[in-house]
Structure formats: C-alpha cells, structure tokens
Amino acid sequence: MVLRVRPSAAPFGDSGCMQPRVLVVDDEPGVRKALDRGLRAEGMDVVTAGDGPTALRFARTGAFDAVLLDIMLPGLSGYRVLQQLRAEGVRTPVLLVSAKDGEIDQADGLDLGADGYLVKPFSFVVLLAQLRAVLRRAEASPTRGTLRIGRLEVDRAARSVRWDGTPVTLSPREYGLLEALASRAPAVLTKDELLTEIWGDEQAATRNNVEVYIGYLRRKLAAAGADGLVRTVRGHGYQLDEALSGG
Amino acid sequence: MVLRVRPSAAPFGDSGCMQPRVLVVDDEPGVRKALDRGLRAEGMDVVTAGDGPTALRFARTGAFDAVLLDIMLPGLSGYRVLQQLRAEGVRTPVLLVSAKDGEIDQADGLDLGADGYLVKPFSFVVLLAQLRAVLRRAEASPTRGTLRIGRLEVDRAARSVRWDGTPVTLSPREYGLLEALASRAPAVLTKDELLTEIWGDEQAATRNNVEVYIGYLRRKLAAAGADGLVRTVRGHGYQLDEALSGG
DNA sequence: TGAGGAGCTGAGATGGTGCTGAGAGTTCGC
DNA sequence: GCGAACTCTCAGCACCATCTCAGCTCCTCA
Image (cartoon, rainbow over the protein chains, first blue to last red):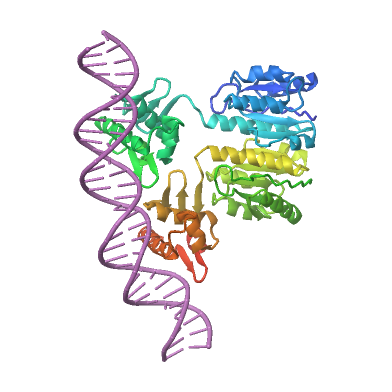
C-alpha cells in the first residue's frame, strides 16, 4: 500500500468541529499501524480493531464518525459486520475495503449500506479523499442541536420552540410536526411523510390527523405572532414559509 | 478497464422510483460507450459528455442524480468542472475518476466536494457499488437538487419555480409538467410521455389534458415574463426553449 | 385554395382537497 | 374519581384544481 502523508494546512478545523473519530478495522497489524499514523497526522482520532467481533463491539456504540472496514477479517467478515450494524440501526458511515478486486463482486448483495468502496492497493490520498467526503456529508446533516429558521428557534434537546424569542408551548404532536418541517425547510413534506415520521409506521392515523394538527399548530403559532409560517402546498403537503421565517 | 455486466434482478425499481439519471464524462469514446452500455444494463438513464465545458453545461442544470467525472478532460479539467459546479450551488453527487494514482494527489485541495473517488483501472462492479451507494444516499435525503435551465429555476424540494428570480406559483399539474420538461431539457417530451409521468398509468386523462395544462402553464409563465419558454414541436410534443431559457 | 389534422382556449361543471368546530376517548397527576 | 391536557374521529363547508367539450386557429399537404 502506498502511504504518502501530506498534512493539510487546516486538517479539520474549518467548521469549528471536533476531531473526527474513525474506527479502522484490518487484520494486518502493519496496515492498522500505518493507517493509524496517517490518519492521526491528518488530525483524526483513530481507534483500531483487528477482527470482526471487536469491530462490531466498537462500532455498535455509535461513537464513531466513520468506519474503515476491511472485508477479510478473522471471526466475522466485514460484510457481516456491516450487515449487523445496519440491522441494529447504526447509521455510521462505512468505507468497505477489499483485498482484491473480485471480493466485492462475490458479495450476495452490493447494497449493504456501505458509503464507499476501496480496492487494495489504494493510495492513502484516495482513502483520505473518500473519508473526507463521508465526514463532510455526515457533518452537513446534523441530527442534534438547535434549528434556527429565521425568527423561529427549535431546540431539539429541550423540545422547546421560540418565535422572536418568545416561547411557544406545543403538544408532542404539534412539536413533532414543526420540527419535521423546520429540519427540512424549505422543503415540502407530504402528509404521508409527516405521518410516518411523527405517527410512526403503524399508519393507524389518517391524513386528516395531519390536517387537524397543522391547524392546532397554526393557531398556537399565530398567537405568538408567527402568522402564516406554515404554508399549505395544495396537492402535496406543507412547508415553512421561507420569506416569513427567513425575514 | 474491466467491464463485467451483471444485470441485477431488480435494477432500481425497489422503491418505485424512476430510473436514476447518470452523467458520464470521459474523453475516450470507448470508455464512454462501455460505461453507457453497462449502466443502461443496470437500469440507469445515461447521458455522456466528452469534454469539460459540455460536462459543465449538462451538469449545472441539476437534472442528474449522479455524475461520473474523469479528471483528465480536454477544455476544462474534471477538477475545475467540479469546483465550478459546487461554486454554483449544484449539489449533485459526483464520483471523481483519475487515470492514474498520482492525479488525485496533485489537486490543490482534496475537499472539492466529490462524493467518491475511483482510480483507473477500476472494475465495473466497484464503480457500480460506489454509484449505488451515492444514489441510495441521494434518494434517502429528500433534499433533491434544484434544476437550473438558464433563467428558469425549479426547486424540487420546495416545489417552487422562479423565473429571473421572481416566483411563479403553479398548481400540482402545472408544476409537474414544468419539472418534467426542465429535468430533460432540451429534449422533446411527447404528450403520452407527459401523461404517464404526471397523470400516471391509469390513462384516465387524454392528450387534450396535456394541451390544456400546457396552456395554463404558459399563461402563468408569460405573466412572469417567460414568454415562449414552453415550445410546441408540432407532431411530437413540447420542450423548453434552450435559447430563451439559456439566454 | 381547400380539406384535414394538430394544437389552443374559454366556459362551465364537478370532484377533491384542505380547514374547522364539536365532541368523544385516552392518559396522567392529584 | 376528577380535571386537564392531549389525541383522535367525523361531518360540513368553501374553494380551488381538474376535467370536459366545443369551437377556434394554424399548419401541412395535395
């Protein structure tokens, strides 16, 4: 494997985020060590594992920002590890590494949920590029923190909502609707999307439920001064009004 | 390059979505042709480009679900194309392909916004795996890209349309027509194609419906200043006027 | 020049979509 | 048990999107 370490000027501090934590899984100690050094030099926090069960144990904690996963592993193949992780609902981005070209081909299914594929021998630079692409994406879609859409403020940790600084008390359903709309603003969400997201997959509720709760939500928002924030897109669904929330 | 075509049982119909549209950019006609055939066999809709400027012109419309972009290109390097696209706000996933290992290394910055990296020679299966990973992600996130055909802007997430910056409010049918035409511009779409795409397969509607709604659409567009944007190709169907929208 | 076909459009009917109020059922704390 | 908050159901209403259709214009071709 070619290893050419070239530390970037600003490895990962651009967006003020923390060191990304990367799990490196490979059965060869030499490879682990080389990758560990190389990635550390790029400002990442690296943890290594040498076999499948260990990898799974580490990865299922969800404590990593990305996993570099070799397919050939003692104990449990990389495929199985990935499969198991996805089955458990772990969404951590995974880069699959195969020792030879044909290996990926032999998988029963290609769509196991990996986020990138590398074939040995790969250059460190290519690995780094893939890794960064994956980390960049993960960073771009944060699932936590406070949403700020103009004058609207949705604190997801506290499940509280403010408009122009004044708090708006919402019921769980109302809050769910608003958070869903805010987290994707200014996209239009269909009633069915909102149903599955807030009411769950059981589909016990009907679309009229969404209409009713949009009504409740609107009333409370209007009382707080956010009149017209939730807009109806006839025939499709609802969205947060860009102009209003953004202004 | 190794080409091993293996049509899947269900290429891409799993989630009932449309064929993914992929833009293949490579300066070698042989490679273009091979990729075109291979990807079509996998159920994808493929458009090819042989040089940088052409690639940029196609890609900046936002009408593709993924771009396979060779770095070595006449006219404008793949890097520049990618850089330009990102600068314009085009978020379409891009897989960068380098002819040799060192090429990626030579880029001034790795973080141009590519979503995957491949080094020639790569096997078709690896390409397919990367491509699918990218498409799967794109499909999972409802934030579909914005179509830009000259002065026309179609935001597919917000279902909003702008001409020269001024918003145009459209009914669902009208919007469907415009999006269909914009996503394939400057191709001519027949009335039957538009019928099946917007009205569905039931075929309850007739071709006159398309004519009527093209009329409605034209009226609203004309009111916004986009007079003559939707062109009739007698005997065939409708298309967006490149010259007008592109100028 | 005229016939036929393709495409356009205005008027009007209708059905669907979305909104709302009333009220019943449920859960939870006291 | 009681009240409060939340959730859900339902029916009625208003309005808009959709559809139908006839009559029109325009193009093509003989």
